[in-house]
Amino acid sequence: MDNLRRIILQMIDECKNERDVDSRTEILHKINTMLPKSIQIRIPSLITNDYISTALYRIEESLLVTA
Image (cartoon, rainbow, N blue to C red; front, side, top):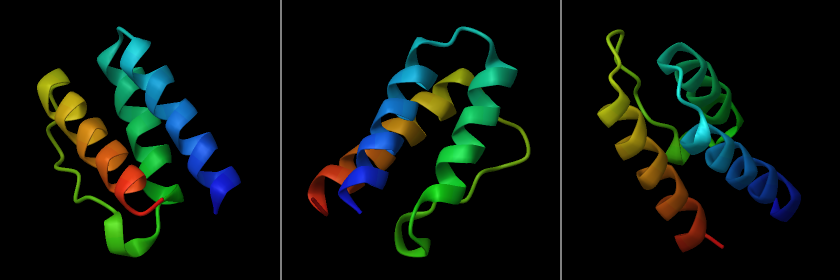
C-alpha cells in the first residue's frame, strides 16, 4: 500500500499543477479508482476547479491519516 500511496500522492501533485479543468477531472477520476473503496469520493457530473481542489485535499488528508 505504501507504493500505491506514493503513486497517488504524486498524481495529486500532478493534478494540483495542471491548469486545464478537463485534464484535472481525468486525473481526479484516475486517482479515485485507485483508492480503497472506504475512502473513494462521489464525483458529481458537473465539476469545477474548486471542487477538484477540495476533493484532492480530502483525498490527501485521508491517505495521510491512514498512513
